[in-house]
Every structure is written in C-alpha cells, then in structure tokens.
Length: 389
Image (cartoon, rainbow, N blue to C red; front, side):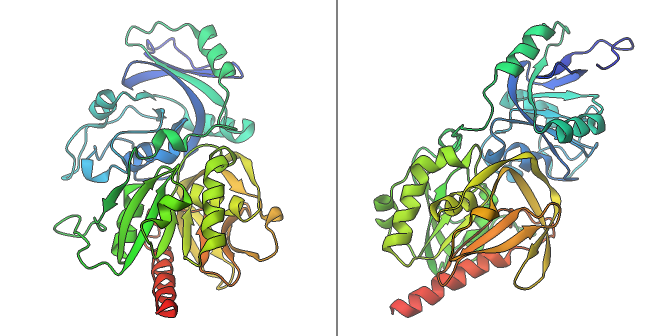
C-alpha cells in the first residue's frame, strides 16, 4: 500500500487481491471497475485511450511523460475515449505541442474518464505481469474519501472480459461510407476521389486510421455494424471484406460474427483481410480456437516475424486474447509470430486471398513496417477482379 503520510490522496486504485495504490486524481470524478493492463508505448496516449479495443480496460502507461503533447481531435481513433481509465506515474504537465487544442486533464474531465497520477507504475506493471491482468476499481474523489473495502469488493465481483461481448457496445449504429485517407503534410487528411476497390468493413470497434489506410490503398469503404449478416455484406457487391479490430472475448463475439464469415468464405471467392479481433474472428471461422493471455500485448515496440520472408516488423499491439496456433486446422497457415513469446500473429487460408494479422499495421510504430498488408489486400482484390473479368 502506498505511503499517504506526505500528501492527501484524491484517487485510489484497488486491486481484487486487496492491494491498494493511492495517488492524485484528475479527469472525471467517480469510480469505475475494469481489467487493468499496461501499455509500453512512448507516444500515442490519445490514440490508445480512444481505441475501441480498450473497452473494459484501465490502461497503465509505463512511459512517464503522459499529457505533454495535449490532445487534438485529429488524433482520435473514435469520437471519445473508450478505455475505462488511465494510470500514470506523474501528474500530467501542461501541453507543449503546436497541434494541441486541449489539455489532457480537461479532455478526460469533459469525456467522463477517470485518471490517477503519482503511481509507481513499474511496481504496478510487475503486479500485472505476476498476476495476469487483474480486476481493479479506480476511484477519484477531490475530498479523498474512499471506502476501500467496497472498492476491493467491487473489483472482486467484476465478471471480467472472458465471455464478454463488447463489440456490440462499440460498433457503429448504422452503416456509413468512409473516404478519408492518411494524414499528410501540410493539408491533413485528403479524400479518396478515385477508388479502385469496393470494400465492406465490419466494425467490431474499428479505428479511424485503419479505415484511412484502406482508403489510402485505393478502397471505397462502406462500414457495417458488427452484427451485419452475410446477406447484408453481399448486398453491397464488394470486391473484398475487411474485419476490424475490437474489444472483448472473441469467442463471445464469434457467436454472431463467425456464421457471417463462414458464409462469405463458403459462398464466395472474395478476398478477406482481418486485423486484431478481426484476425481472431477469421481464425474461429476457419476452425481454430482462441485463448486468454496472461497479461496480453499492449505497446508500440512489439517485434513480429513474417515466417515466409523472415522479415521482422516493429508493430503496435493491443490484445488480451490470442489465436491458439496449436488448433489451426489443415489448410490454414501460420504467417506471423511474436518474437516476444512466440504467440500467433497471423494466418492465411491456403490457396485463397484470405488472411489476417494480430498486430495493428495502421499504427505506424515502425513507422510503416506493416503497411504492405493493406497493399496486399488491394492487390488481392485487383487480381480477383481480373480473374472474374
């Protein structure tokens, strides 16, 4: 338990095992319960907080300088923060960045997200690695009044992410078109005006920059909700189908997503490309299984090896579940592996333009090590159209 003699804490992080961390609260007041993870990225805290894949999670940032670049709407991956809360080592400093339009503290307050600073994040990270991603309760009260026993009890009572379908909570309410491409100096985000391929993107919690990368690869993108049926997908007469990232337990989301994907695979020859949860959805549809990881992969420094070429990519990761490579059926080839722990990071269907990866190729930590995957998808659609013609 943290030493509280030298200051009056205004925030409290209570773990299910009874460990309690005190610190300085900022952002919204109140309390929330979620799974605790850590992220090792040195930049991109705004993108991380607004990544729908972090639904149901509180993020511990191992890099101490969080908040120093402020926030800007241009960097949001979705409309508002989705991560349940934020844990940092130091109280955020004032923003120093020409693109900043708002202070991190003000942004979190306005969008209803709780944060705690002054935490020994190295110790906390070790706890996460030791325990596996723990269930925690995070509370912020400017008067410093905390019912610690109740917070610990609520952390223990939380059901956890296993068996939880969160894609339905973060998906779009209705279909929409997307034509914005990747950011470019000096004009920002240009529009795709001459697309070559029609893509239906299934939104399990899609990040905006993934859609931008599809547009930059020459795609006319129509986004459909996570619960879209195969009939609804095919009604758009797409050249390819994209399966997006997203949060929660893939087995739970797979209850409705897998039948749709199976129908697409069984009745068409369309190219299919999946990322993150979309990768796991494709694997389940092909007959593999997924497993809960101890503490997951969250960061922008994850080395991934493409098996066929031997090329190593520095990638961005955000997942607490993984495809179990031991369950891949015949005809499904493992294409990428993590060099941290050997876990599966990619598959393809032998003889078909159907593939997926666990990492986030749009997140640019390399900075463009993995963008070839979007180009590969576009090339597959071009080849498919040529064969049909």
